[in-house]
Length: 119
Image (cartoon, rainbow, N blue to C red):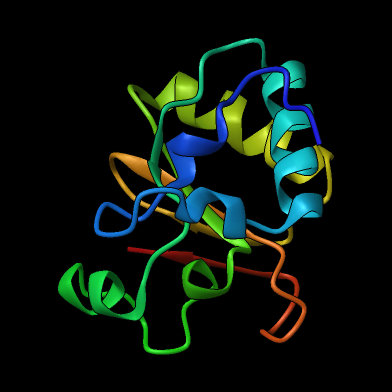
């Protein structure tokens, strides 16, 4: 799999180098397409998380991050947030969390679909 806008290392859990390789391929392809559509840089705050790192950052026990289906993208402004959000929805992400400084998106098939939440 080749990504146009990201390196797989951007998705590593901080406590497990190389863990970005555990990201779901479809998730990454959708994200890469969203980045192309958005036309603005996406800085990945979080990708794969080990159970330990997920607990450390206060992630949900059943987090899609621990299975490689999720990522968080940094946002700089309300305009930037809208551009990224629109692109993520356009490519098919339907599990989205919105915070002041980031957007979470995932396509975990084992979690409720068509949901959006605030942090």
